[in-house]
Image 1 (spheres, rainbow, N blue to C red):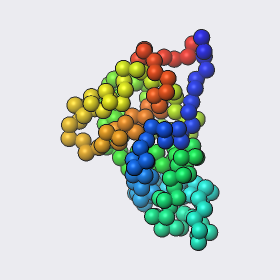
Image 2: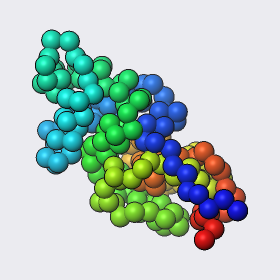
Image 3: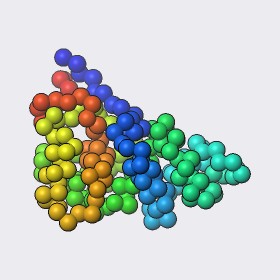
Image 4: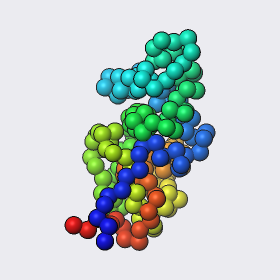
Length: 181
């Protein structure tokens, strides 16, 4: 039996996102920098300085937000560190949804880190996902519990993936399989 735990780097989330939604997530995260804790804001700005090349700006973090957003898409698609920071910022800016999804998944028996755990320090997403818990099933059940949520189906699905630290690559029949000791 394979006892290796598999991880996908954080930027693998791109394979599960529509282009328009990716842009919306990036726009929300970068547009909300002023509303984030100093540590998160600094981490994102450091990534922008290091990874972005915006013509006319020696320090890309000083560029107008529209230029940063436009230049962020390819970096989000290629950099696991930047993708993780953007997802963490997006989650911080959707704290009510994060609380609701965390409680929802906990009730369903999902093994989760505490809500405030620094997920950006993880090596990536786990690849196992319970077959019976497809995104559509989870979104429907979440909406039944929270019928007044303004969150889109994509928002709910992304929050599930980020908070669970999982992407549905290896579907398993059991609720959750753990590697053999």
